[in-house]
Picture 1 (tube, rainbow, N blue to C red):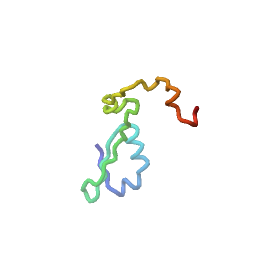
Picture 2 (cartoon, rainbow, N blue to C red):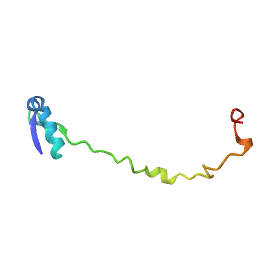
Picture 3 (cartoon, rainbow, N blue to C red):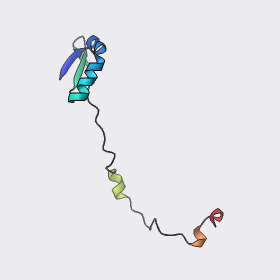
Amino acid sequence: MKTVNVHEAKTNFSSLLARVEAGSEAIVICRNGEPVADLVPHKRTNRVKPHSTLGRIKIGYDPVESLAADEWPEAGR
């Protein structure tokens, strides 16, 4: 983990971002020798995996079942 001061971070921000992006390296930004912020790679979320709550939802009817004639709205008859 690399440590840089605020001035160096401002001066070389683009190159620091490139290092984080390329090597998944974390960089600590310090002011007066005290850590202020971490520059870390972004963690992408898996959007394909369904939420765990969705597995607990139960539907008490067949959602693709056709509607009877009396169940259609007046505008659709």
